[in-house]
Image (cartoon, rainbow, N blue to C red; front, side, top):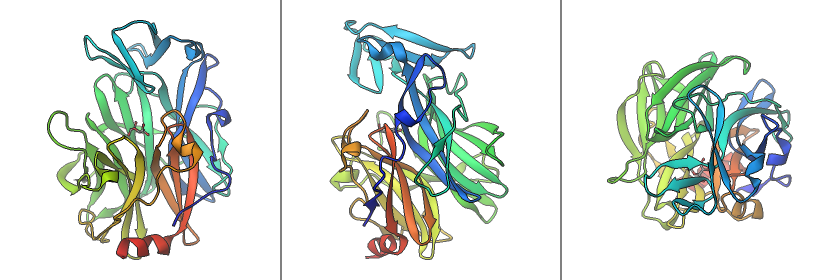
Length: 348
Ligand code: MAN
């Protein structure tokens, strides 16, 4: 159904200038995407690490309480640290987790939705204490006169959902953490239902429970309640382990189209889709039995974390669904399908 764009990957770390000379960009991925005026606008997740971490040892970046970027040096032969995951290291005796890179949000713009100009400076940088390990995976929704952005705020306290707004993509208004850790994958509907806003979100239970998509409502975007389950991890292998909302829901003739990510037992990420009625965002009326996109291209199967396709934004232009997605936690790619085909697939 989906055709990968011939120019994929559209954006790679090489396209992005580091925010400081002592850092290197190792990922430009999982971007929130929207149409703004006559341009397609992206808020990229730009992951950076110290250039000096190219050696054997690991330098874990974090924003200290004084607001300064700081690095914790971990010797590669220290047996106390588990270094098997490229994303994070774990101190076995204490359970302390540190990330191997730190992400900020960076703006990129395009006239044709394919060739993007990436800003030279960050658009939103992490602040302590709730974002000291970085800002990740932005999702953009137009609401009233503003563009509302939700993203993951990562810190030693866990992953929570930060909400910010902008009216012009120049200035940013911060509203703080709207869903506390552990919660992420907040995708906001670009409309009100009666006098409430609605989002999907993904609580992360620890010892008990599974990783499912929930819904919440809010009168003001800041206070969220009325929590309810929308979709459980599937019995199907491809969505067995975890699911989470992807792109903010898209208004179509047949209802709201949602594209979400799902992982199998091996931790491979693919994308699924479902439909909800225009007035009932919590009731799924059509659920794709198989994924709409799985990691197949080399730039999806290999990279910083191989076998990952992960979306935070899709747009409809000229009846085509343009699905932007992070590939292998490293680059941005685009896959396109006629919107009608996607709807037919779900209704079948
Ligand atoms: C988590 C998040 C995503 C990332 C995937 C795959 O879900 O950190 O940002 O893309 O893992 O590593």
